[in-house]
Length: 135
Image 1 (tube, rainbow, N blue to C red):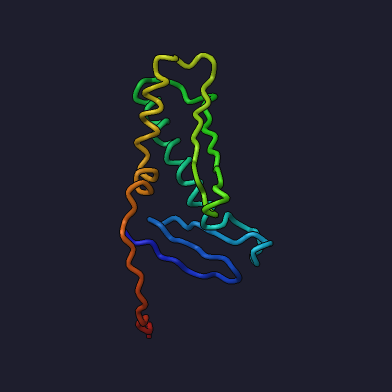
Image 2 (tube, rainbow, N blue to C red):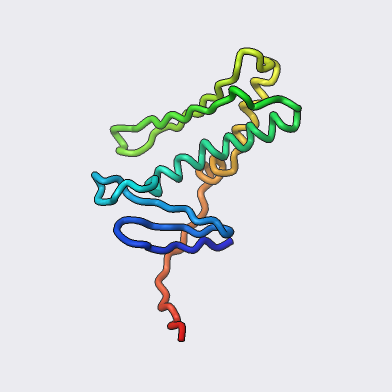
């Protein structure tokens, strides 16, 4: 898989993924125009969205409705290490959601591929190449 990153102007950075364009910008306080989420905000949102995809799949496979289900993602900052210390995912279900599925619902969220990628991070290679001129 390849993702193409382009720079449309200002502090904006776009990512083209499988034919979709994801727009990012920085907050006004960080020199951007605040027209889109910042890249780090998208990274954080991908964790909750991934958990949501697994909850959706879990419910779908059991014929359970996702109506009224929400995931609240809390970011707990570690002031000593000056970074995120914990991410808490709270799956809120409606009163009629079968309690017998609570543990399995937690296990489904634990399967999130984004979460797993963070827990066992990949190696990164960063290099600079000279682009070929298009004639």
